[in-house]
Image (cartoon, rainbow, N blue to C red; front, side):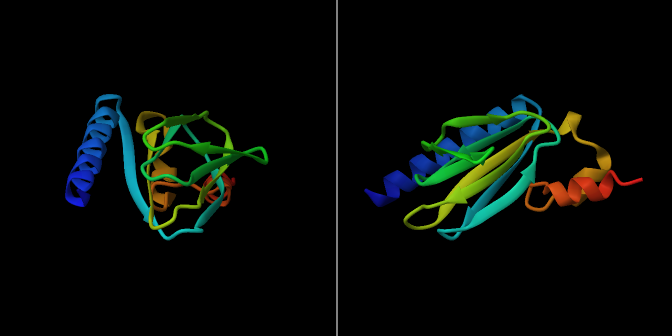
Length: 126
């Protein structure tokens, strides 16, 4: 049973990746330990966050939204946000962004597909 569930998850991930490619998005698959929090991220372009495991939340303007696995959550360009993983085991998620809308300089600054507001401000200083 566990093997069947794993292969189903892998199939869903592959379908999601294909969908991102078709839409012209760059994407990253992230695996974190439970309790990991990514704070003060910045969406330079439209971004899509997809929880792959239960227990993932997105924080925007101090409000947290709990996400179901494989539910797409759109983050508008210019938005600051946080990612919180409260998964029982490992937390898996995918993050995609519109590569055509991302400045070439910030592509180099992205860490694991994420851009912090500090990184964004650094590359836009004159």
